[in-house]
Length: 233
Image 1 (cartoon, rainbow, N blue to C red):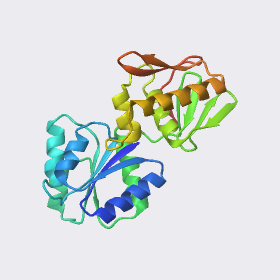
Image 2: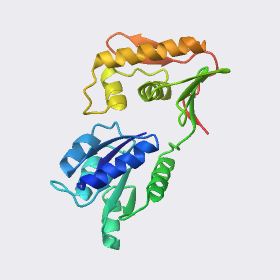
Image 3: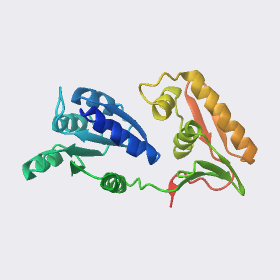
Image 4: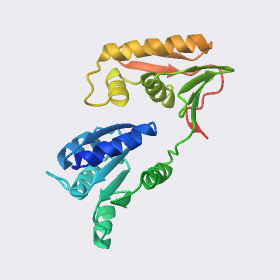
């Protein structure tokens, strides 16, 4: 899961990134409303954690602009204000949930789980596609009775490809999803990690493969067991 944090308190934003990354999530953080809107409009994030009181553009306006632009990414508003009118305003602007500072890490994670359930994207343990399964906790890739551990980048790439098995994923999309918008990664990085994954699929004896689509990127072609690219509990 990839999460955008829009919070002008840099120390709090760093703390949120640390909490989420320790739980296996990928994060980006920006510190003003306009930057938050620009990043969120990319559509690559699974959840946006958004402060209300922000420079350049407040959180309510950010959410309203996102919804008008057709971006339906779940938004968790984060604010020190707990007045009922503010909560109503936030929800009416298009936010999905509202959490008041201060909060505990456990409370934050509970809100995130609730948001993903509402979107029909429950945080499951594995993604299965064809004859291979990817464990989202251990980062192990399994085929039959053989397993191999993936590095974080290999895992992130496998997750994107397997969750969208049969669909083309451009190199630009993979860079955004796996390395992030501000990363210095380029197409050579994508090609290298695709090669790593192909070798690991071969090591496992999997019939599934990562196809190169000239001019379009890559596609995970699931073979063997009946394809189910949805996560399973």
